[in-house]
Image (cartoon, rainbow, N blue to C red; front, side):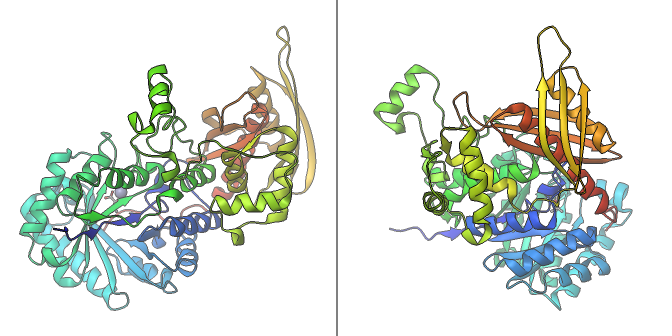
Length: 517
Ligand code: KIV
Ligand code: ZN
């Protein structure tokens, strides 16, 4: 007997909720690059932004809507007429446009944030859906803070919005408060008790404050949800959202536990997507992150290594290749020609239309001069560094550091600002500090350095160092990333990248503080 399977849709909100992760703001071009990769990954829905939040967000949603052909492209919207109009306008060029309307339903939010009665919230939600539905057929409704909302009222809200025309009903655990058993039971209760609830798609949107976002999403699927909202690498507000790679690989790897569902994602695109996002946002992937972390498939203990050599399935429940990790294979070197380079890009699934091959090959050659063995990870890092990056005001030309155990370290930096070169030397409390001080002196600003980290992209002592730093100034926080075989150079590149992003953000500040219904 065969079981009838249903598809669990993957709704990716990296470009909207993910972008709310501290410092993760992306430029319009960067969002476009991510959206194309999400399409290649095979997600069903892309939430491209919140059009009413700023002109930049509206432009990003519009560009993604125009570029992406497969997935539905949505803009988030409050129940306000002006928001909905902007959302509709931003997705008008999409092949499959949609609008995602939300309003809070917990008494706490109604009384302390919205200052609205329960019936006012129902009226606002239904009005907004009916209004949007006149222009766009695909409407998702979210009851913000659903997991802390009173059950009967929540059921009532959902029944009314179904009548108003919403086809997807999203149940957010906005504060990451729910336990898997509770959240699964809530989904089942809503499906069984909401009038019209069996003819719509139920969706789970979980936050990770207690580390339960993936577990809660899986519990939702077990109980009838047929859409999961998630982000690449689990980035998002506070502790983040449900991680796409974890939830997808859990559904695939434990198909025995989920026999009645399938997922359409091309899993071999998971690792390239993860690295691309990390490169663009400057948010490093923790080494122990499931599925995509550097140690996710590393076996340290002798007994494990022995077992894996005899039979991989002794200690591996997924194959690295299934998520696009080519197990660090040596691919190219100094003597590789352009043909071999382009062939490798094809094997890696890179869309050649997105790459300036001449520039990429030049950078590859420069890297091959410094590094004997070039791995797939190096090539992906090199491409991601270029893709859709903010137009740079500052460019690092050269750097030299002097350091002897008995002397104060000194760094001399040559930087190009708006086309003209400047040089500065500074002493510091360590080489990186000296280097950052010299850069700060040239650009005439010293934002607060909130976080700084260096990791190696691959093994070996000549591996490329990947530096990430997070800086903030006047309430704006950005992340920068730099990759180089010399870790001081990687650090300087990360700092300069962060300064360029800070410039960009100052010019494209969010225009409205998003609050209210
Ligand atoms: O977490 C949340 O409640 C949200 C909604 C806007 C869907 O992101
Ligand atoms: Zn959210």
